[in-house]
Image (cartoon, rainbow over all chains, first blue to last red; front, side):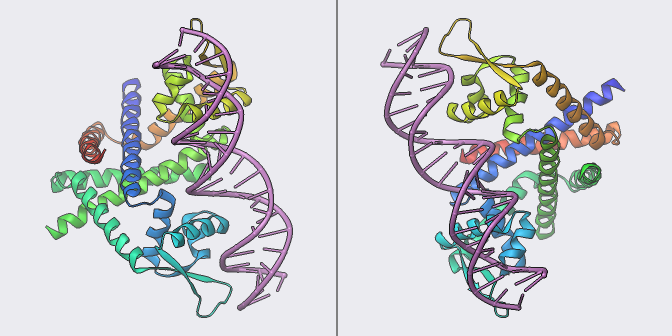
Length: 150
Length: 150
DNA sequence: TATTGTTATACTCTATAACTATA
DNA sequence: TATAGTTATAGAGTATAACAATA
């Protein structure tokens, strides 16, 4: 029992170490593209949803509309997105990729795939399936743990 | 080949999803203790090292000495640490836990163990070993990937 | 009235640069 | 000269609250 607990803890610490390294890697990669994590996160959501109102981005990113204003301001200044008029609601602005923004997203998607391949490509199909299964279980238990408090 | 790449990508996305949930969980737990992630990180390092100069904390946390000043100011204001005179170097201050700080760290360590147990306790020894082995491999490859750019 | 996005203000974390006190 | 830590200043990200324009 005592030995098992200790092992749990060691594996958890390994996960946290991986989290730290992943954050470092992402910050480096994004920095090389002239992006901050927050701005990249917004662009990633924008890519998934197509042109959307800032309202929707605020909900997706779980930040306030005010914070979205600041991020979009910065992305407009960088020439990656524009605010286009909403066809049916004159209060809203549709955040939309510029050509440069779209090609940057292609670049980001490439990087994403390359990292995934570098990390998981060497695993056998069985290893990968086992790992993915364990991840799913852990994620499920983490969601339950979060629900306990949130 | 195409199918394998897609699978790599899906597993990587699962890892990123877990990272996001872990961050949420930690921010919630720390917030309940009145701590920000940065302040908690500093306290965690302080616990590992015992009373140290801010210089050492700056190196451990990979932030500037100026940033450490701000974090320690906040922790002093919260009554969790004090700046004690260094026995042999009058320029330096030894950051030291108060009694309240120490008991908070006991609380944090408990939470840490509880989460580790909630996430990995249900795994069999074999599953856990396989998962830990895969984690080690992935972490190793990520380090190599980071070295490529850094 | 309710919603979209803004301006105004403030807090946290971080950085660089200049400075003080000590080594 | 070099080091430990600070003050001064700045930028990014976030929040709340009050407001404008529109629905």
